[in-house]
Length: 285
Image (cartoon, rainbow, N blue to C red; front, side, top):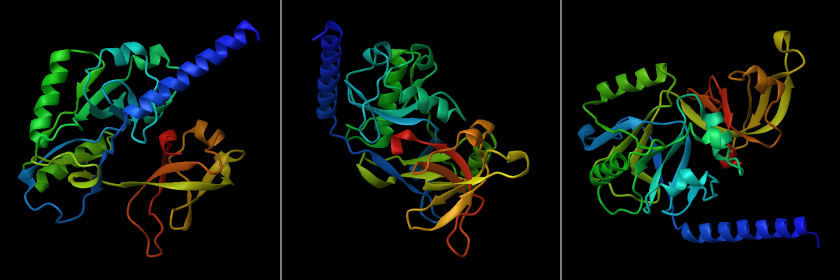
């Protein structure tokens, strides 16, 4: 066997053992938000809110970094070696409207050192703690401020004054290109799975559908994608014809890909209104 082959086998073996070790360290079922519905909240002062960041949700076990689905994230050693030895949950985030760049960086199995310099781990919870969110928030805020790492921060939360005031904030964030708001119950404990302790609030909703066809463009889009034909989980089919960049029309999502789209309510036939393409999230394929 050639030396290069031996080296390759050794590197694969090390990577495999590291992945097995990392997976064995992950015993975490993330807490998932429920969508806001009218009259869901009885007392608004029971909640704090933050902007919903459009990044890649990540879980730091104290040793390894994972996606929400439990896939290992191959961050540079300088990024992870400086993180504290306790469980943290947050968003790997570059900035508003930078989801695809963030995803390309974070999901690369060979980390790009320069690209990772743009990424910040914005912590929003301490999943191993049994404290209330108010207590968890003070601890993670104090921890991140004390560490003074350029790539580690926390998601700022604010007290909710009233529904009217909150909707004004939501409208402002929407105008700036933000995703929406997250509400967290101040006395809520961390619970795996869907929990009313965390509520997401948006002007428009996001959903996922499977690409089942490409529809040719017309006019200025002749020779490239005009629209995607997609199928919802309930089997309903519809077209998405807006939201694409020129590059995305030239290189559309593949048949079978699950795409994220944004919409505003449904028609009487259950088809999303004003559906527009957002992105392909490789962590959900």
